[in-house]
Length: 351
Image (cartoon, rainbow, N blue to C red):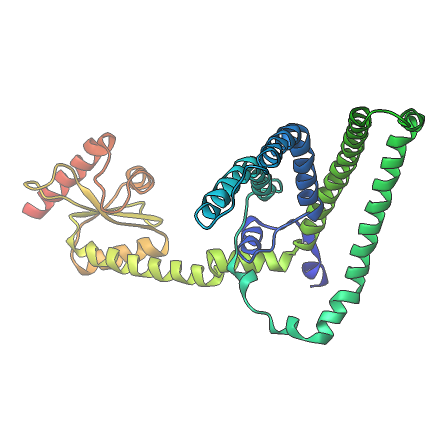
C-alpha cells in the first residue's frame, strides 16, 4: 500500500489539463523579465535614434516659434491638440512595439492560459499575519537573494564590458560633445548587449528549473492514477455488473425467440444454433439463438418444450456458431447444408 501512495509516476494529461483550468501552470518570471529587457534593447537600437530625432525636430520647432506664438483663448485648444497629436505620432510606435513584446511574453512559455480561479477572493490572504509571513518568509528571502544575485551578476558583466575601454575615458577630456555622446552611446549599447545575454541565460535556466519543478510537483501515485481511471472510465466492478445484466437480458430475449425457430442444429451437446426460415418471406434462414454448453442445453430444453425439431450436425453447428451473429442470415457457403436440413425437417413435418 505504501508503494501505491508514492508519487513515482508521471502526471497524466487529465491532471495537467485540470491544473491548467485552475490556473496552475509552470511560469518562469525570469522569462518575462528577459523578454521585456530585450524589448527595451531592441527599441533603443531600432527606434531610439528615430524617436530622438523626431522629438528634437518637434522641440526645435516649438522653440523657434516661441517669439511669434500667440497664446489666447481661441488658440489654446488648437495648440494643445497639435502638440498632443505630434507627441502621439512620436511615442505611439515605440509603445506599440512594447505592447507587442508584452503579448509575446504570454506565448514565450507555452499556450496562454486564463483562469477565473485566480480571480476568486482568498480571505486568508487578507490576514496581516499571513501577509507578514509571505513578506518575511523563506520564499520571500529566497526571491530577495535571487534578485540580489542577479544584480551582482549584472554589475560584474557591466564591469567586465567597460574594463577594456578604460583607456578611452582619458581621451574624452576636452573632446567635443558629439564625440562624447557617440562614445557614451557605444559603451551603453555594449553594456546592454552583455546584460541582455546574461538575462537570457538566466531566463533559460529558470525556465528549465520551473518546468522540472512543476512536473515533479505534478507527479502521481499509482493509486491516484487508478482513481482517475475509475472516475473517467467508471468502476470496473460496476461495468462488469452492467455487462452481466445486459447478457442476462440478451439471453432472455434469445430464449424467447427459440420457440419461433424452424430447426435447432446441435453438436449434439456442446453447441446449439436455432434457425428460423419462412419460405415466402425470407431470402435465407436467420439465426435467432445460439450458445455453448449450459446455454446450448437451455436452448434444447426450450426447443423440446415448444416441439421445435432438433437435428444433430456437429460440423455445421460449429460453423454456424462461429460465423453468424444472432438476428443475421447465414452465409452463402452454408446454404446447401442448411437447405438439406430444412428440407428434411419439412418432410418430417408433412409426415
